Length: 206
Ligand code: ADP
Ligand code: ZN
Image (cartoon, rainbow, N blue to C red; front, side, top):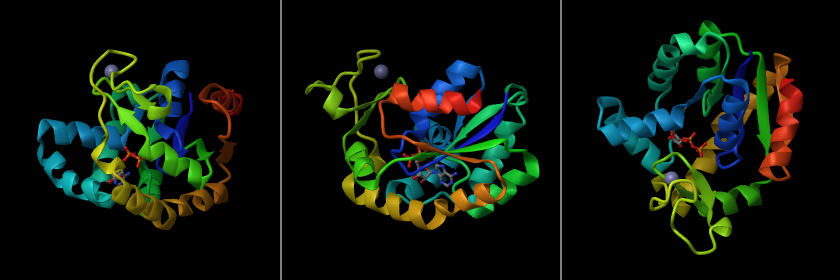
């Protein structure tokens, strides 16, 4: 199986499609955001460091996430393909990744900016890992998957959303050209339902 990088703005659906790819092709879904949030929850040194950056909508320093991902990619389960979600997020991270991995395909999930803002501000998450949107909940605040109380991620607050989108445009969007130049970029026009968009991704992955 392939080594896959997922690109796209916050809220584009990287996490959703990464989870679907992971289930469909049996490769690990490696999300730096999830790893950092798990560390915050457990109160580790890494979590303490990451917390202040994430709360502001800023990026955690490159050397920290690069070390984290390099360790994770060395695990036995990552030797036969993986889907990287939320990494790389800067050119420096992409260059560091190239030293330890061969990326076969970079999937850019392309979604209009006004759609993104609506999604992030309506996003609700559950400690079971589920993500949903208020528009699909009909006023309920209960996770449709497990029944627990849903909550709003700290960094989905409006001021932080704005900061994250600015960081994305400045620091992460240049990765589209970076992978295009390597000849591994695929654009997915994510304008349909999750199912329709995922069909497009499956076609690309074969
Ligand atoms: P989203 O894609 O919705 O912004 P993530 O869960 O991928 O959410 O990331 C949440 C936050 O975690 C980011 O705003 C950033 O502070 C931090 N983070 C995650 N991945 C990285 C990374 N590769 N480099 C630096 N910071 C990161
Ligand atoms: Zn749940």
